[in-house]
Amino acid sequence: MADVTISSLPLGIPSGNSIIPFSQGGQTYSTYIAQLSSLPFIPKAWVSFNGSSGTTVDSEFRCSIFDSYNINKVVRTSTGVYFIYFATLMNNSNYAIVGTPGDSVYRAVGLTKSTVTTTSFRINTFDTGGYNQTNCGFINVVIFGN
Image (cartoon, rainbow, N blue to C red; front, side, top):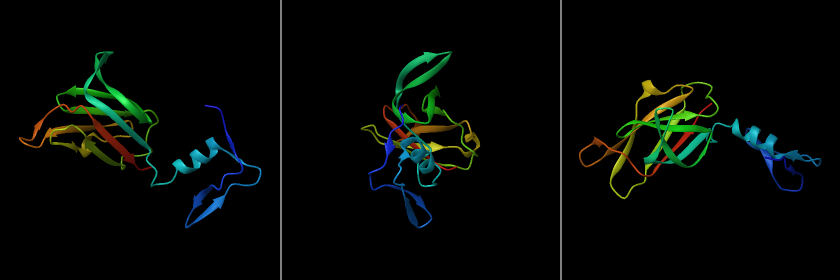
């Protein structure tokens, strides 16, 4: 991506309880994004994927990703079990994970803390009628942390 210089937009960098405006000389978009991404309320990664379809690559079933940020791949290891891998590692394994299934049926997303690492984490999708693990055609996950 080419750098875009921002000089006339009324933007700035959040700092504590105030905003430091861009200087008259401008600031590049890349610098602005890098500074924003260090803030704790900005997602460090997110993914929207189809847990029901994908392709096999290197003996892994990789789910079809609709769109994502900082996600390398989503691997389904068994029915309703997905490992999500980061493109850029997290600084620690104390990040927050928020997930929502979006099928037309009643589903839930669960996670196990012991599977959370700096490289990946596991989620499970369930049918809320019988609480059986099931594949889900539309799953969204957002990650917050350092």
